[in-house]
Length: 104
Image: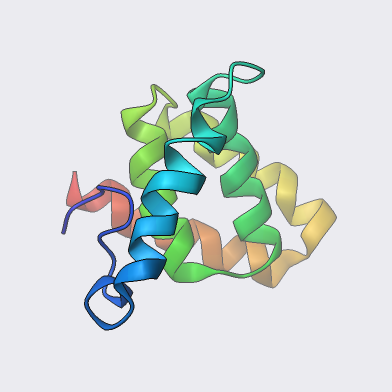
């Protein structure tokens, strides 16, 4: 599975969504100078955990590791989120993290 933005399974069915994901979200928003990609990854994992977005958490955890976020830091974000988003959201994200980490 690739971690390249805009190449999700929706891309074949809705190519425009893939194009917008690549060009607007990643080429524009993720490239803004106000935050590092590392910080954006941490924020995104926290938000997706809060929203219980399992599939998106998976790809963003991979991206976070690519953006120099450590496994321990991801764990700390998820622990922190447990108290703000609720136990089920955090446990779900921990399960995804284990899957992602086990895949290497």
